[in-house]
Amino acid sequence: MNKPETILSRSPVGWLTALLMLLCLSTPAWATMPDATAIQAAIDKAYADYKDLEEGANADYIPALAKVDPNVYGIALVTIEGNVYTAGDLKTVVSIQSISKVFTMARVMDESGPQAIYDNMGVDATGQVFNSIVAIEQYKGAEMNALVNPGAIAATGMVQGDSYDDIWNSILGYYSEFAGRKLSVLEDVYTSEAATNQRNQALAMLMYAYGRIEGDALQATDIYTRQCSVGVNAQDLANMAATLANAGKNPVTGKQVAKSENVPEILAVMATAGLYDDSGKWLYRTGLPAKSGVGGGIIAVSPGKFGIAVISPPLDAAGNSVRAQKAIADISNALGGNPYLVQPL
Ligand code: GLU
Image (cartoon, rainbow, N blue to C red):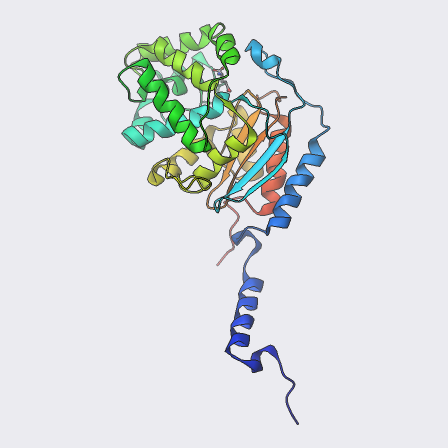
């Protein structure tokens, strides 16, 4: 009696196919990204689920931010292969605000090494609000991080350049390479924040008094204010996050923007202090290094997989976009984005 013909009995091609099928079946869900349809479905679902959510309020301590349309809601995800998935508003440009702090810190690391950040403002959570004077006083401007205002202004003061324009062009050019297009400042936001940033000036002078800023502390504050006013849409921010997910190489333009060896340190500070006082809660929910800004944007990085960004201006009490947190957490968790999710041996 003839044996029934199976895929294995046919040819070497049959054997190869069977082996591939076996490999696919034994690959854990978290080891690979789901297919394009599943990624788009996760994004569409998060968009629909939170589109009509009316929680939170725009930041208003910077007058220009209060005027931004609270209904703006855009989602973009970019994989390390450079594949782009989106939903909602990708056109509206908002100010990058505190998300900029990640990229200025990265610039300093590229120029002076990660140890320079560690030695100056530090890499620890402060347990205080992002513009706390107490946090400076506690350890004389150390034992904090480059994602709270005093540490961020000090980081801006560390960017190399012979003049205001040199430093500014270096920062803006660097951000633009992350975004994959030439970014520019939203002048109305800059003017509004520059007229109301006396507290940041005070933080900078205190950092200067403790030797954490060398040179002109008020110039550093002004450049910092300008960097916070850079306009970005959800696609720009997702490209920036995806560049970090891809070891510093922009997956859309193919350009190595940041030194790959510094990316683990950049992501470590984001994980520690990216979402203000709720950074622990965020990491607990998602495992993702992330950074939010009072303009309503959040970026998050799934290392080796994707970068994701959501823009939605209404913020919760901790200062993080309500819709962005929910959407990113749902999408990443649906796609197995949590880097701590591993299979036991
Ligand atoms: N430019 C803002 C400030 O210095 C940034 C705050 C933020 O986004 O957390 O207050």
